[in-house]
Image 1 (cartoon, rainbow, N blue to C red):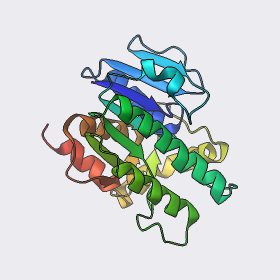
Image 2 (cartoon, helix red, strand yellow; image 1 turned 135 degrees about the vertical axis):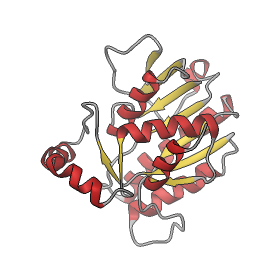
Image 3 (cartoon, rainbow, N blue to C red; image 1 turned 180 degrees about the horizontal axis):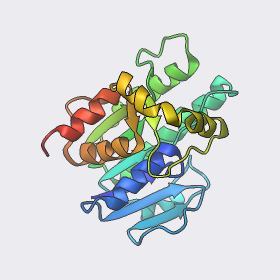
Length: 224
């Protein structure tokens, strides 16, 4: 497979990139973003693109891909509804429509969040917009569209969040992680597990479009 990754410097994106590098069935990885990535293996190509709302200038670079792992996202803390909508909905749909034009047989995997509101009517602003984004993506006739809704995420392999408070949270919770995992096995997934599940779904599909933490482990246990 040939894969495009957005948000490869974030925690989930780092995990997805690492698992793609390790997977022998993935021959080429295109990372698109505003931030450089250094010391990557030859099968990774990094395309710096500042305007993530428009892709006309780089269309020649985007054809011939089998899957997109869209891991780009942000917290709603401190943002107005308009700001959060622009980053979460507008930016995601701009990328998806640009890629569909060039790769209609692509599988598009969107990293959403646990609690996303598919009704778009709930009281939580971030949940409504996440749900709205999922609903809009599912209307695009790609070969497949899947929305991943991870809950608590355990960063592995030296992966860290870019957000300071998130890094601190994981640092202080690390000693308790074995206990947390034991008590809430269906609510916790690792960066490794999410990345591997993305690859598996891109390759073979899944029996439902919205996938939560419990689904990731199940997908990885299923036969190819």
